[in-house]
Amino acid sequence: MTSAAATLRTIEELETGGLVAPRDRAALEEVAARYAVAIPPAVLDLIDRDDPHDPIARQFVPSAAELQTHPDERADPIGDRSHSPVEGIVHRYPDRVLLKLVSVCAVYCRFCFRREMVGPLHGHTLSAQALSGAIDYIRARPEIWEVIVTGGDPFMLSPRRLAELMTMLAGIAHVKVVRFHTRVPVVAPDRIDADLVGAVRSPNLATYVALHANDPRELAEAARAACARIIDAGIPMLSQTVLLRGVNDSVETLAALMRAFVEARVKPYYLHHPDLAPGTAHFRLTIAEGQALMRALKGGLSGLCQPTYVLDIPDGHGKAPVGPTYMIDGENHVRRVQDYRGLWHDYPDQPLPDGSTRP
View 1 (cartoon, rainbow, N blue to C red):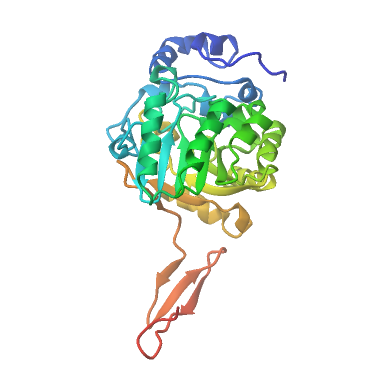
View 2: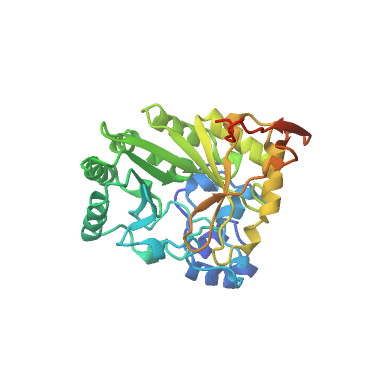
């Protein structure tokens, strides 16, 4: 398929491109009025228009199901606003902060937990005054060791803006690590050029890039090449994936995705349980279903390919690992441990004579 010339941003453009049916237009216009829409050429090239259940399309093409909200859903599901002491900063954990530098993305995921905060209607970048205030906040708190740059997608910024940010952060002695969260290497791989890669490198900071992808087809040749340009410059990459019904809720798809990450030299990091964002119930599985998938991956998939299954506790209480349990208490200081085949074994967990346990 030949790449489209431009990003599709309206329901009319999606209809012309054969991605939505004319009969759905009125409902989808209502969706687009509330939640941003953008599908760039690299993503259009991945969509299988002959598959009505295509997992790439499901992630990015609006659906009337987004108009259905549930009482447990919330506009700010992980409590960004309640943990934002100054504009642009989310400070949830002691040693790290989020720096929300930009509110736009190259593509808008239909399940986004920040869907009420991102898109052209929500501004573009932090003002110079707000950025200065955010940097002052970081500088005044020596416990902050890592700055996680997010948004929106920070790789939508120009190399010049990114380089300016890195210079600011490098001037703060206690900041040692800068992590960028992005989808750009997958959805707009041509943006990952020598200028951008050079801009996020610093001799005084350890830079990491966390890549969001949910289906193995997203790691196409162009995406892998973009990742290689980052990694070959000495910048490690991690992955983030959201567990989504109808996209990656099978052992086969998750295994193929995690292997694709590792083959591209991207270390699997987090598998997120989907958040309670409004209009996203059609994507959500139960935690028990997610645990069953993680259990099925164990043993049959290299340890390099194993992400940590996590839940963001609603209202800003942080992430909690929610993967399956492989150990239970037995009797007489014996633990029962389950192997990857589902078989249980005894492990002696005997205290030492002085009453302490082994280190």
